[in-house]
Image (cartoon, rainbow, N blue to C red; front, side, top):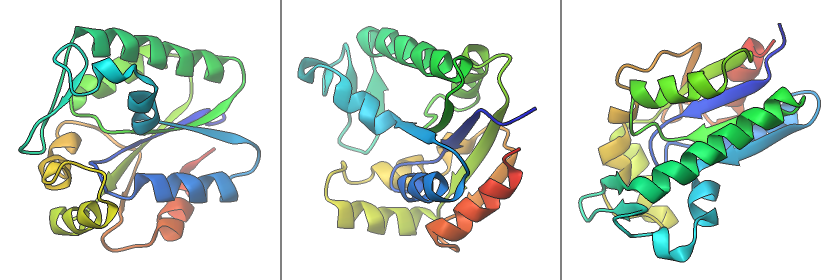
Length: 177
């Protein structure tokens, strides 16, 4: 079977976006990228920093409400529909629901060939990237660095605190069928 979807899971500022750009360049064919950051940006402004939508907590944590969950369910179904229509997709996500988040994606992507990638990054390195970015709640990167991997199973794991994006992408590309 040919890989149709590559799902990258890692905390904020772990380096997923850089890996995605490299994968799009080195994988043959047209691989479209969709990320949780783009999904959040697509939400109505009133659902950002809202109890009904997504709340970015002062300690770097995140809380999601019913409107966010409903929109996310529609988004994931749309992603799966594109893959079922022949699209090759790279998903950049932060599984704050840990294994439950992976189970939700598994249910939506059932029947598709999916490659699960863990993008790890030392919490201190991610925190430094977070400061340099300037567009994240301070503490988010450190808070998410390890927790997003709890109970999640991977086909491939990379560590961006020890390897550059291109090197990580090459390791992932070797696993794409």
